[in-house]
Image 1: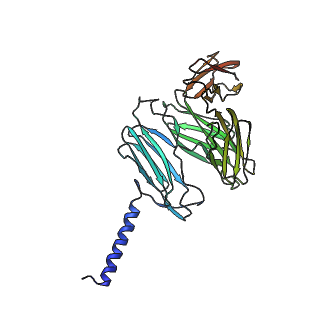
Image 2: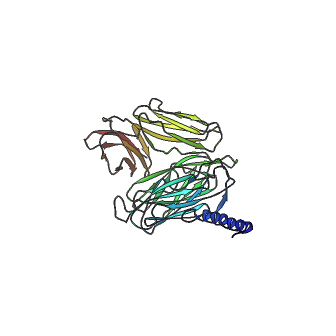
Image 3: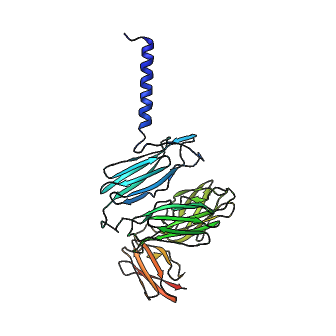
Length: 377
């Protein structure tokens, strides 16, 4: 017969065992308790929503926020199929490694049960698409960096041979060494960083550089460029800067924005293009390029390029194609001065030598065409 004291000892043992099992069940890689700088910030990672790796390739990311208001939180990472992709985590750093060809879902989770999902594809070089799959930057579509500071991100996918360009080197300087993209905040303001692979495919990162006055970095979850269908009303979140926020639209007939505290709700009204500008109380600006396509069956072919484009020698610009009937193609009236290429629904024009006006024509599969002019200087 077991006495009362023995029962207490046994009960205490099982409670301790349960706690130990719970602490060990944090998913692949485990996790460390990390104090949160701002417990109202949702959990986030620097990883894109989708990622493509080769077998044996590893990409490194960071995680932050979350915790459900707790003072401390533990992050964990798990894979839906460890035969395909393996996730490991230590503190606020985690990595994803391709194991074999296939697809898996990586879940990064905080103590409160909030998660971020990363759809992972592992493919062999020379498989579907370009050598390493889709070109990507392992970062959100909009990031912030403090003045006189640097952020570093991993570039992957595409066909390798990466180069980077900044839309305003007085605000941001971007350099690439191998697959490592470094962004240097030069002065307060906004700029775009575009990464190209050797095939001319590109992907863009919006960068906000904050000053040294202690104001929290200003950014949004709204991607740019963004394609919406008529009637859609997506909602995104704005962070940092100084409240209150405001938003303007360059074409309110196409799309409007409504801000409530930190939430931005868009309303796509008719087919067309517009630029939304999000401002904080200090005047910091985040532009978002939006294309709205009709949900009907007879969408007119369009590009987001203006009627007249001006680019520098050796520089490129990327636009979105929509409507019509895919696949799309593009030609230049003077390929010595301007080259035009299409990957999916992305149109890229590059200035080679100085030229006054060069016509670029975009076609859909039915032969329907739209035109715009490019000046290279």
